[in-house]
Image 1 (cartoon, rainbow, N blue to C red):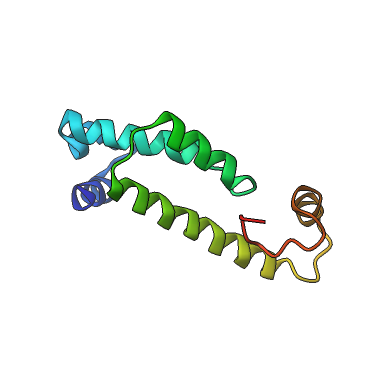
Image 2: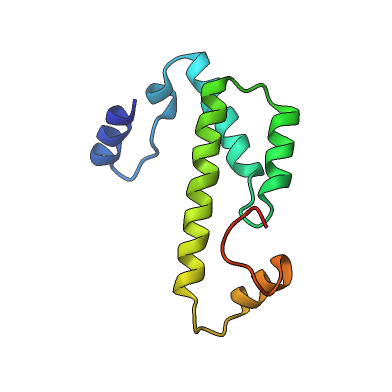
Length: 111
């Protein structure tokens, strides 16, 4: 599927990517839509709330849960990188995160 997606990206002439052609089955489309919903619910600033919504509103196989945990770790790592990049920078974003998570916020989503 990804190879087909990449082919379409390389071959496109100002047009849209045909995801129906990439996803090709109703099952694949349903899985794709489920993950779009999951990603929309997840908020790096409030990961516990997002996880609660997902586990209480969506049926997840064990493989789905592993993928979701990997996504949570990915968000956490990116948040930590962002915090490191912001060291010494007085910005509104940094102040917002301090207000949201407290003065000792270290980039983890589990504080």
